[in-house]
Length: 112
Image 1 (cartoon, one colour):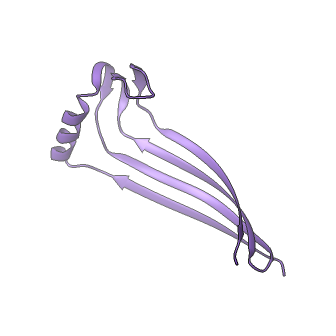
Image 2 (tube, one colour):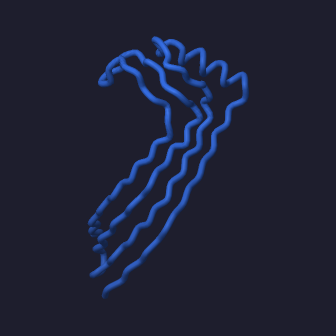
């Protein structure tokens, strides 16, 4: 008994704050900002994920799977700022920019 399956998935999320919430976020973030290198503060962001997973069942109750997923953070801050120390990161100039990451997961599952 050999069975296999292939699936693709996609997720998209957008978060947009009204001006009152934005002002509150900026007030709370001011505690961590020591200096600035010129930045614009906008806490809105978008998140998207795209992935594929394949599963193979060579015998009953045993499945091997492999998954690849791409994650993208589209944040609306721009520029750079000096942020206060928060373990394990030091006080230094950090750039605000979009971020991407890719993950690869492998799993073997046996059901009893």
